[in-house]
Length: 106
Ligand code: SF4
Image (cartoon, rainbow, N blue to C red; front, side):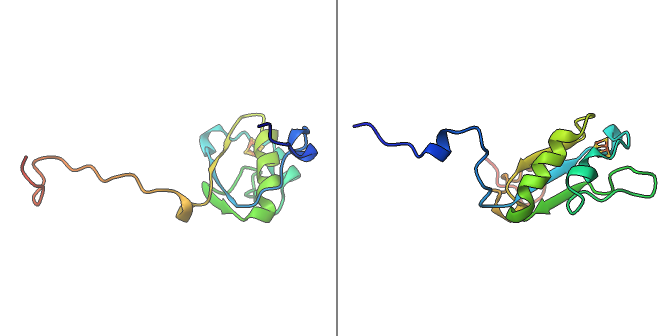
């Protein structure tokens, strides 16, 4: 059986974000172009020298499109949209050295 695909899903228009995103900034790459702030002033603050002033940020769904746009606009690729906000991400298992006290033998 063939499923019908809504017209909007087949278009080039990005779907509306229904959840927020987590953004990571790489300050060492920032050259102070300001494009991120220009396209998303409510998401990306700049410091007094025009460099981005955040490292890690959880952006709500209503600002997620602007966050993506600001990241794409950065000519230095200093901004990565890395996924949903922190609480929604699974926590990786803790690794312990076998000599750490309390580690079961085996
Ligand atoms: S667009 Fe990129 S290089 Fe420019 S201020 Fe923003 S993070 Fe820095």
